[in-house]
Amino acid sequence: MSESEKEQAAVSRLFVESGEKERLLRILRLRLSDSGWNDSLDAHCRDTIRNKNLDHISLDNLLKEVEDHGKSKLQCRNISRNF
Image (cartoon, rainbow, N blue to C red; front, side, top):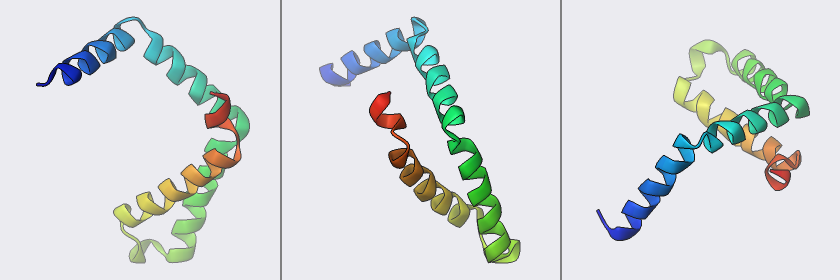
């Protein structure tokens, strides 16, 4: 393990141990929920399954499409910029 990797691991460990990671994740979840992002992603999943028929879509394809949709909606909602 390189010195840089050791430092990164130590910082990550401290980030988790201090509770800061959990605090930031709570804030992110709240902002996503308040912005309607969760509901938008849920609706998109349902529409995708309905439109493509469950027999013609794999989990991997659904995840890829939902991931792309989620990322695009995240950028539109200023969540990442304000975070």
